[in-house]
Amino acid sequence: MHAIGVDIGGTKIAVGVVDEAGRILAKVRRDTAADDVASMDRAIADACTELAKEHEIGAIGLAAAGFVSPDRSSVLFAPNIAWREYPLAQKVSELVDLDVPVVVENDANAAGWAEFRFGAAREASDMLLLTIGTGLGGAIVVDRELVRGKWGVAAEVGHMRVVPGGHYCGCGHEGCWEQYASGTALVRDARQAATATPERARRLVELAGGDPDGITGPQITQAAQDGDELSIELLATLGRWVGEGSASVAALLDPELIVLGGGVGAAGDLLLAPVRKAYEAQLSALGHRPVAQIELAQQGNEAGIIGAADLARR
Image (tube, rainbow, N blue to C red):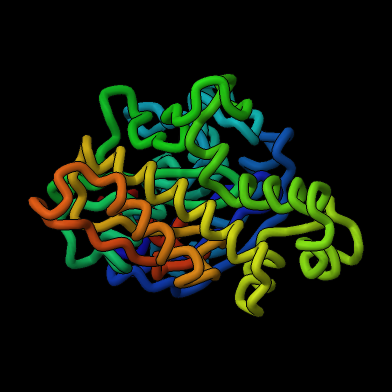
Protein backbone atom coordinates (compact mmCIF):
# COMPACT_ATOMS: atom_id res chain seq x y z
CA MET A 1 0.00 0.00 0.00
CA HIS A 2 1.31 3.45 -0.88
CA ALA A 3 1.16 6.22 1.71
CA ILE A 4 1.77 9.95 1.57
CA GLY A 5 4.34 11.53 3.86
CA VAL A 6 4.33 15.27 4.54
CA ASP A 7 7.38 17.00 6.01
CA ILE A 8 6.14 20.32 7.41
CA GLY A 9 8.65 23.13 7.82
CA GLY A 10 8.14 26.75 8.82
CA THR A 11 8.42 28.09 5.26
CA LYS A 12 7.70 25.06 3.06
CA ILE A 13 6.22 21.59 2.99
CA ALA A 14 7.61 18.59 1.10
CA VAL A 15 5.06 15.91 0.21
CA GLY A 16 5.78 12.48 -1.27
CA VAL A 17 4.18 9.18 -2.19
CA VAL A 18 6.13 6.37 -0.51
CA ASP A 19 5.96 2.65 -1.27
CA GLU A 20 6.37 -0.18 1.25
CA ALA A 21 10.13 -0.38 0.60
CA GLY A 22 10.58 3.27 1.64
CA ARG A 23 11.05 4.59 -1.91
CA ILE A 24 9.59 7.97 -2.88
CA LEU A 25 7.62 7.54 -6.11
CA ALA A 26 6.53 11.17 -6.59
CA LYS A 27 7.12 14.41 -4.73
CA VAL A 28 5.82 17.99 -4.66
CA ARG A 29 6.67 21.09 -2.62
CA ARG A 30 4.63 24.07 -1.49
CA ASP A 31 5.70 27.35 0.13
CA THR A 32 3.91 28.15 3.40
CA ALA A 33 3.79 30.78 6.15
CA ALA A 34 4.45 29.62 9.73
CA ASP A 35 1.97 32.11 11.19
CA ASP A 36 -0.93 31.17 8.90
CA VAL A 37 -1.90 27.63 9.88
CA ALA A 38 -5.12 27.63 7.84
CA SER A 39 -3.24 28.30 4.61
CA MET A 40 -0.73 25.60 5.63
CA ASP A 41 -3.60 23.11 6.01
CA ARG A 42 -4.85 24.02 2.54
CA ALA A 43 -1.36 23.63 1.03
CA ILE A 44 -0.99 20.17 2.59
CA ALA A 45 -4.42 19.08 1.39
CA ASP A 46 -3.82 20.49 -2.08
CA ALA A 47 -0.51 18.62 -2.44
CA CYS A 48 -1.99 15.36 -1.15
CA THR A 49 -4.96 15.63 -3.53
CA GLU A 50 -2.62 16.28 -6.45
CA LEU A 51 -0.50 13.19 -5.70
CA ALA A 52 -3.55 10.99 -5.08
CA LYS A 53 -4.71 11.56 -8.67
CA GLU A 54 -1.77 9.49 -9.95
CA HIS A 55 -1.34 7.00 -7.08
CA GLU A 56 -3.59 4.86 -4.91
CA ILE A 57 -3.14 6.11 -1.34
CA GLY A 58 -3.96 4.22 1.86
CA ALA A 59 -2.80 6.66 4.56
CA ILE A 60 -1.33 10.13 5.12
CA GLY A 61 1.41 10.87 7.66
CA LEU A 62 2.17 14.44 8.74
CA ALA A 63 5.65 15.07 10.22
CA ALA A 64 5.41 18.16 12.44
CA ALA A 65 8.10 19.95 14.46
CA GLY A 66 6.41 20.05 17.84
CA PHE A 67 4.88 18.09 20.71
CA VAL A 68 2.33 15.64 19.29
CA SER A 69 -0.64 14.29 21.27
CA PRO A 70 -0.49 10.60 22.31
CA ASP A 71 -3.32 9.71 19.90
CA ARG A 72 -1.25 11.30 17.09
CA SER A 73 -4.03 13.64 15.98
CA SER A 74 -2.96 17.07 17.27
CA VAL A 75 0.09 19.27 17.77
CA LEU A 76 0.08 20.38 21.42
CA PHE A 77 2.83 22.98 20.97
CA ALA A 78 5.29 23.97 18.27
CA PRO A 79 8.18 26.41 18.79
CA ASN A 80 8.30 27.76 15.23
CA ILE A 81 4.75 27.35 13.86
CA ALA A 82 1.55 28.85 15.32
CA TRP A 83 0.18 25.49 16.56
CA ARG A 84 -1.25 25.36 20.09
CA GLU A 85 -3.50 22.35 20.90
CA TYR A 86 -4.09 22.25 17.14
CA PRO A 87 -6.18 19.36 15.67
CA LEU A 88 -3.97 19.04 12.59
CA ALA A 89 -5.14 15.58 11.44
CA GLN A 90 -8.79 16.62 11.54
CA LYS A 91 -8.14 19.90 9.70
CA VAL A 92 -6.30 18.14 6.87
CA SER A 93 -8.84 15.27 6.72
CA GLU A 94 -11.65 17.75 6.21
CA LEU A 95 -9.84 19.36 3.27
CA VAL A 96 -8.55 16.21 1.52
CA ASP A 97 -10.98 14.39 -0.72
CA LEU A 98 -9.72 10.97 0.42
CA ASP A 99 -11.23 8.50 2.87
CA VAL A 100 -7.93 7.48 4.50
CA PRO A 101 -6.45 7.78 8.00
CA VAL A 102 -4.40 10.92 8.66
CA VAL A 103 -1.73 10.57 11.36
CA VAL A 104 0.48 13.28 12.95
CA GLU A 105 4.05 12.40 13.96
CA ASN A 106 6.83 14.41 15.56
CA ASP A 107 9.28 15.25 12.76
CA ALA A 108 12.34 13.81 14.51
CA ASN A 109 10.42 10.61 15.29
CA ALA A 110 9.49 10.36 11.62
CA ALA A 111 13.09 10.90 10.49
CA GLY A 112 14.33 8.42 13.08
CA TRP A 113 11.82 5.79 11.97
CA ALA A 114 12.99 6.20 8.35
CA GLU A 115 16.58 5.53 9.44
CA PHE A 116 15.49 2.58 11.57
CA ARG A 117 13.39 0.94 8.85
CA PHE A 118 15.31 1.78 5.69
CA GLY A 119 18.55 3.59 6.57
CA ALA A 120 21.59 3.49 8.84
CA ALA A 121 19.82 1.55 11.64
CA ARG A 122 17.97 -1.06 9.59
CA GLU A 123 20.00 -3.89 11.20
CA ALA A 124 19.63 -2.51 14.76
CA SER A 125 17.07 -3.17 17.50
CA ASP A 126 17.87 -0.17 19.75
CA MET A 127 18.70 3.25 18.31
CA LEU A 128 19.14 6.87 19.28
CA LEU A 129 18.78 9.32 16.39
CA LEU A 130 19.93 12.93 16.77
CA THR A 131 18.95 15.51 14.16
CA ILE A 132 21.50 18.32 14.41
CA GLY A 133 19.94 21.35 12.74
CA THR A 134 18.37 24.60 13.96
CA GLY A 135 17.79 22.72 17.21
CA LEU A 136 18.58 19.19 18.37
CA GLY A 137 15.82 16.69 17.69
CA GLY A 138 15.76 13.12 18.92
CA ALA A 139 14.13 9.78 18.19
CA ILE A 140 14.47 6.64 20.28
CA VAL A 141 13.79 3.05 19.27
CA VAL A 142 13.88 0.40 22.02
CA ASP A 143 13.46 -3.26 21.12
CA ARG A 144 12.27 -2.25 17.63
CA GLU A 145 9.51 0.03 18.98
CA LEU A 146 9.43 3.82 18.66
CA VAL A 147 9.38 5.37 22.15
CA ARG A 148 6.67 8.03 22.36
CA GLY A 149 6.08 8.15 26.11
CA LYS A 150 2.79 8.32 27.99
CA TRP A 151 1.92 11.81 26.72
CA GLY A 152 3.48 11.53 23.26
CA VAL A 153 6.42 13.85 23.92
CA ALA A 154 9.29 11.45 24.67
CA ALA A 155 12.74 11.76 23.05
CA GLU A 156 12.92 15.57 23.34
CA VAL A 157 16.58 15.04 24.17
CA GLY A 158 17.57 18.51 22.96
CA HIS A 159 15.91 19.90 26.09
CA MET A 160 17.90 17.93 28.62
CA ARG A 161 19.69 20.53 30.73
CA VAL A 162 23.47 20.24 30.37
CA VAL A 163 24.63 23.67 31.63
CA PRO A 164 22.71 25.09 34.64
CA GLY A 165 22.22 28.81 34.00
CA GLY A 166 23.56 28.42 30.45
CA HIS A 167 22.36 29.83 27.14
CA TYR A 168 18.67 30.74 27.02
CA CYS A 169 16.58 28.27 25.00
CA GLY A 170 13.38 28.81 23.00
CA CYS A 171 11.63 26.29 25.27
CA GLY A 172 11.79 28.84 28.10
CA HIS A 173 14.65 27.27 30.08
CA GLU A 174 18.41 27.80 30.18
CA GLY A 175 21.28 25.50 29.35
CA CYS A 176 19.47 22.94 27.15
CA TRP A 177 21.61 20.48 25.20
CA GLU A 178 20.47 21.93 21.87
CA GLN A 179 21.98 25.29 22.80
CA TYR A 180 25.40 23.61 22.58
CA ALA A 181 24.87 20.69 20.18
CA SER A 182 23.13 22.17 17.13
CA GLY A 183 23.84 23.96 13.88
CA THR A 184 22.64 27.15 15.55
CA ALA A 185 25.24 26.73 18.32
CA LEU A 186 27.97 26.10 15.74
CA VAL A 187 27.12 29.33 13.87
CA ARG A 188 26.80 31.36 17.10
CA ASP A 189 30.26 30.24 18.24
CA ALA A 190 31.76 30.98 14.81
CA ARG A 191 30.34 34.51 14.72
CA GLN A 192 31.60 35.18 18.26
CA ALA A 193 35.05 33.91 17.28
CA ALA A 194 35.04 36.19 14.24
CA THR A 195 34.49 39.17 16.52
CA ALA A 196 36.91 38.08 19.26
CA THR A 197 39.74 36.75 17.05
CA PRO A 198 39.32 38.28 13.58
CA GLU A 199 42.75 37.05 12.43
CA ARG A 200 41.87 33.39 13.05
CA ALA A 201 38.45 33.84 11.47
CA ARG A 202 39.71 35.51 8.30
CA ARG A 203 38.78 32.57 6.03
CA LEU A 204 35.27 32.29 7.48
CA VAL A 205 34.61 36.03 7.17
CA GLU A 206 35.88 35.87 3.58
CA LEU A 207 33.39 33.09 2.76
CA ALA A 208 30.64 35.17 4.38
CA GLY A 209 31.33 38.10 2.05
CA GLY A 210 33.16 40.13 4.70
CA ASP A 211 30.33 40.11 7.25
CA PRO A 212 30.89 38.00 10.42
CA ASP A 213 27.12 37.98 11.01
CA GLY A 214 26.69 36.30 7.63
CA ILE A 215 28.65 33.16 8.57
CA THR A 216 26.63 29.96 7.96
CA GLY A 217 26.98 26.30 8.90
CA PRO A 218 27.83 25.10 5.37
CA GLN A 219 30.58 27.75 5.18
CA ILE A 220 32.12 26.42 8.41
CA THR A 221 32.04 22.87 7.02
CA GLN A 222 33.57 24.03 3.73
CA ALA A 223 36.35 25.95 5.47
CA ALA A 224 37.10 23.01 7.77
CA GLN A 225 37.33 20.65 4.80
CA ASP A 226 39.78 23.12 3.24
CA GLY A 227 41.94 22.88 6.38
CA ASP A 228 40.88 26.07 8.20
CA GLU A 229 42.07 25.63 11.78
CA LEU A 230 39.30 27.61 13.51
CA SER A 231 36.55 25.82 11.58
CA ILE A 232 38.03 22.41 12.44
CA GLU A 233 38.07 23.46 16.11
CA LEU A 234 34.46 24.70 15.95
CA LEU A 235 33.27 21.35 14.53
CA ALA A 236 35.34 19.51 17.15
CA THR A 237 33.65 21.54 19.91
CA LEU A 238 30.22 20.74 18.48
CA GLY A 239 31.25 17.08 18.25
CA ARG A 240 32.36 17.06 21.87
CA TRP A 241 28.99 18.37 23.03
CA VAL A 242 27.16 15.81 20.90
CA GLY A 243 29.34 12.95 22.14
CA GLU A 244 29.23 13.84 25.82
CA GLY A 245 25.46 14.30 25.78
CA SER A 246 25.04 11.00 23.92
CA ALA A 247 26.96 9.26 26.70
CA SER A 248 24.44 10.63 29.20
CA VAL A 249 21.59 9.26 27.08
CA ALA A 250 23.44 5.93 26.89
CA ALA A 251 23.51 5.75 30.69
CA LEU A 252 19.71 5.71 30.53
CA LEU A 253 18.98 3.75 27.34
CA ASP A 254 22.09 1.76 26.34
CA PRO A 255 21.49 2.07 22.56
CA GLU A 256 23.14 -0.23 20.05
CA LEU A 257 23.52 2.53 17.49
CA ILE A 258 23.55 6.34 17.51
CA VAL A 259 22.64 7.95 14.20
CA LEU A 260 23.48 11.60 13.44
CA GLY A 261 21.23 13.40 10.97
CA GLY A 262 20.84 17.02 9.87
CA GLY A 263 22.90 19.30 7.66
CA VAL A 264 25.99 19.20 9.88
CA GLY A 265 26.51 15.58 8.78
CA ALA A 266 28.11 17.01 5.61
CA ALA A 267 31.24 17.52 7.74
CA GLY A 268 31.71 13.73 7.87
CA ASP A 269 34.70 12.62 9.97
CA LEU A 270 35.45 16.20 11.03
CA LEU A 271 32.31 15.82 13.17
CA LEU A 272 32.13 12.05 13.67
CA ALA A 273 35.66 11.60 15.06
CA PRO A 274 35.21 14.16 17.92
CA VAL A 275 31.71 12.76 18.66
CA ARG A 276 33.07 9.21 19.01
CA LYS A 277 36.03 10.34 21.10
CA ALA A 278 33.88 12.37 23.53
CA TYR A 279 31.27 9.62 23.74
CA GLU A 280 33.83 7.02 24.80
CA ALA A 281 35.53 9.45 27.20
CA GLN A 282 32.24 9.97 29.09
CA LEU A 283 30.77 6.46 28.80
CA SER A 284 30.43 4.76 32.17
CA ALA A 285 32.14 1.37 32.67
CA LEU A 286 34.15 1.74 29.45
CA GLY A 287 36.06 -1.46 28.76
CA HIS A 288 33.41 -3.55 30.49
CA ARG A 289 30.56 -2.99 28.02
CA PRO A 290 30.05 -2.81 24.26
CA VAL A 291 30.36 0.72 22.82
CA ALA A 292 27.53 1.90 20.57
CA GLN A 293 28.32 2.51 16.93
CA ILE A 294 27.97 6.18 15.90
CA GLU A 295 27.11 6.67 12.22
CA LEU A 296 25.75 9.32 9.87
CA ALA A 297 22.13 9.15 8.72
CA GLN A 298 21.52 7.83 5.21
CA GLN A 299 18.05 9.12 4.31
CA GLY A 300 18.96 12.81 4.05
CA ASN A 301 16.29 15.47 3.63
CA GLU A 302 13.67 12.90 2.65
CA ALA A 303 13.71 11.06 5.99
CA GLY A 304 10.69 12.97 7.34
CA ILE A 305 8.54 12.12 4.30
CA ILE A 306 9.56 8.43 4.33
CA GLY A 307 9.16 7.96 8.09
CA ALA A 308 5.81 9.80 8.33
CA ALA A 309 4.38 7.73 5.46
CA ASP A 310 5.60 4.43 6.91
CA LEU A 311 4.30 5.20 10.40
CA ALA A 312 0.90 6.25 9.00
CA ARG A 313 0.69 2.99 7.05
CA ARG A 314 1.34 1.02 10.25
